[in-house]
Length: 104
Image 1 (cartoon, rainbow, N blue to C red):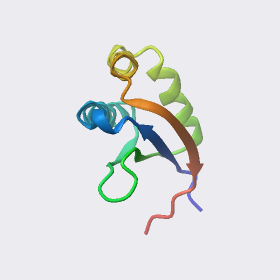
Image 2 (tube, helix red, strand yellow):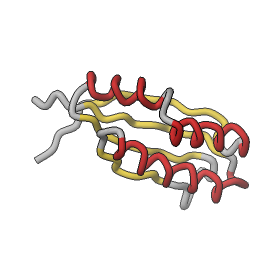
Image 3 (cartoon, rainbow, N blue to C red):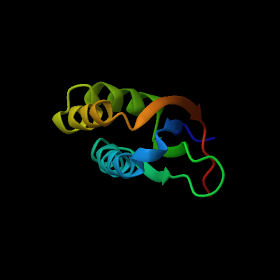
């Protein structure tokens, strides 16, 4: 069994701010990669609920995920992404789940 950890994020977003949330997502894809993870993308509303989006990213281990979390608190680009989300209010709330991935 792999020791990798995949983070599953479920967002409740403002459907009138999809452009802002898309910008936020693109930034975090780059930032997760920069800080050692593999981002699997953001999944935006298409049909059905218009205020729900998801993201998945994987780190080789829980320890490496924790190192990412620590680094994101001080990294200027991460801080800018957090600020952008707060100012635009494109995210209403989010939930984080941890899962063990199965890769071939």
